[in-house]
Length: 180
Image (cartoon, rainbow, N blue to C red):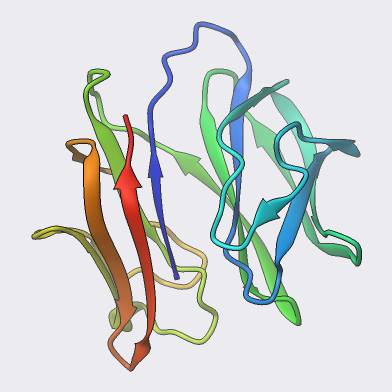
């Protein structure tokens, strides 16, 4: 499981924005190519890390996720729209990897807020077993494998955000800082 937090960028460019998040168990570092070209700042994304949003040309793309030093974990094709934001999640394990593209629909906000959501990247969980919270505010629950909750607006700061699998209490993911 993974918890992601993002800040909204009000870029006036006509590019699509894409981010790679590594939630693949056993993948110490992954990278992303877009139409065969390395995505800048996504050349070595550590497990449970992300590349941050980067602008790319909109249109038809082939995304390929690479396990650094080993080879391809998976690929997908998609059509990306101008001025839209997307997250590519590397899910599962290195032996059974899934690459998932999610359109990031941010709520209206000002620059003083951050967003958090729950993404289920755990291939051995059920949707009803996954929950995440920021303080007392539930960020997501009942999220199926390879899916994400909507973004929840929160005040930036230091939180202990925990996602847990009620069927496997020892499996916990924690994010400790949200930035605007």
